[in-house]
Length: 384
Image 1 (cartoon, rainbow, N blue to C red):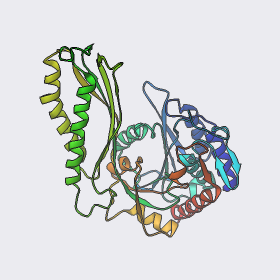
Image 2 (image 1 turned 90 degrees about the vertical axis):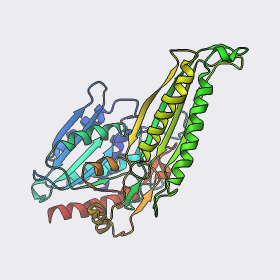
Image 3 (image 1 turned 135 degrees about the vertical axis):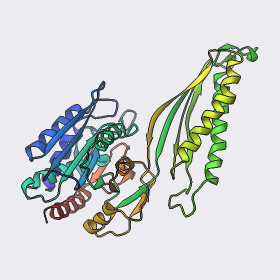
């Protein structure tokens, strides 16, 4: 299957599916390939944007089976110093270069090659495929797909998310919640700051409150937490606003994120921020200017993958790879969304996260081989 997988990866890389752009064409391409292999394919189109999810099934109808999950979007290449065309696959020194080769079109190509190598009629257990949009901008597609799957009686019992882990099983990662907060103040002359509402100053107070909450999260760390660090974190990504030293800033914008480690962390932070803003910050701003205030935009709220004592997906992956030591990763995936609707989930895929999102992104052909070997064993498991 190696040659087929590499050729498919070249096709997938040629679709410039940066998250800001459409993924409809690559989804149609994957649908055609899977339908030709005998799969029953569903396309979930976005209501107002040129985005789509694909969900497909090989084998018998009914509950259970294994879901192979991947995303079709990639991060931008702008301002990166590539030595080759990022959307034309290049092979060199045992590596396949191109945007998305590692994160995570390599796994998607392997999954399609498995579908084409199997005979649907021989499968005794369903094999499902989920290829989603906008994972890189908040797992937006997977959230929509999970909502649709939640309505069904027949769900896969096991999900394998093929993010790059060098084919090492992973059964846990933190959540990732990202926000944009816009502050509206009142411009004025710097010589009379009390007559204005300085949006940058109020944004700075908001950040100071976030820093207090960051320390509170340290104290909330659960006992024997396996994550590093063992507590939820908060990071300030960007604070911008103002035009000159002698102008009271009328607008400011804050980007920040938190990564919860346990249920309740996110609610703790959001409830505390809401109370601070509504009881202290906004009243102080509107005492000077009634139209001043702030609004929060949710960029993404992606739940983490919680390690479980019993996890059939982890056990299956151990059997398929021979690696019994499941680990944790610091980056987020779609896995927690599938766990949340009742599946046992493991993250395991080809390539190293160290290569993702960089110029000259690549995946080693040896990693493709390891992934295909695992998937071939999975095919045998589903036809036994």
